[in-house]
Length: 123
Image (cartoon, rainbow, N blue to C red):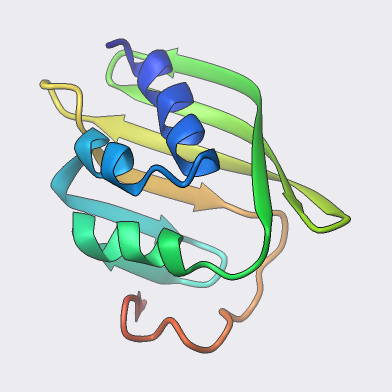
């Protein structure tokens, strides 16, 4: 699977809440970072759980995919209820095609919502 295909598959698995499929696409020691909140999640189980527990009725649509070697950038439209926003996600893949690093950029800096401290660390 190419980096671009891995990126679109990543989004499709999130959209469909296919946590088992998502886990199969991730390196066991995947690192997920959100620079706006300075949160980091390390490890496949914690990242999948973070997404499975994420509140609200959220939906993702891919607006653009740019791949270069083992890296892919995704421009997403994110919908939560009637609110729409853009997000950018960078994925790094290992030689065997697993996602090793995810950097998730949101439009504005914000304080993280309470209730996910058991999964994240602040930097």
